[in-house]
Image (tube, rainbow, N blue to C red; front, side):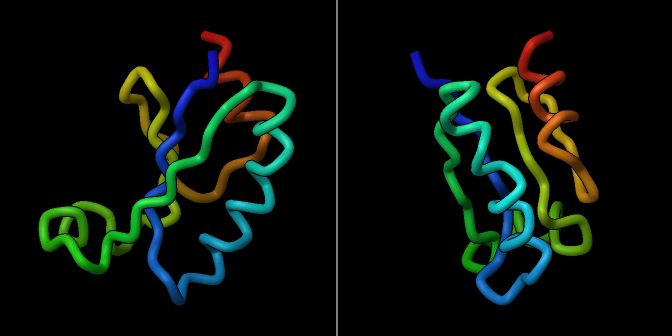
Length: 79
């Protein structure tokens, strides 16, 4: 069963594009689904994540802010 990872990002964020590339291999190896959430249209998300994006939220609610690697996220998923 696929696990959803939420990637908090915004449209013009070059680090967010990088994060998607880093996470892409996990889609196959970890059977995850990446749900990208643009914070720019939600005031509360913008307040919470504006200076921290990209931020990954795991299915268990744990967050990992930038910078991160695919290996770090993979380890977090296996816990």
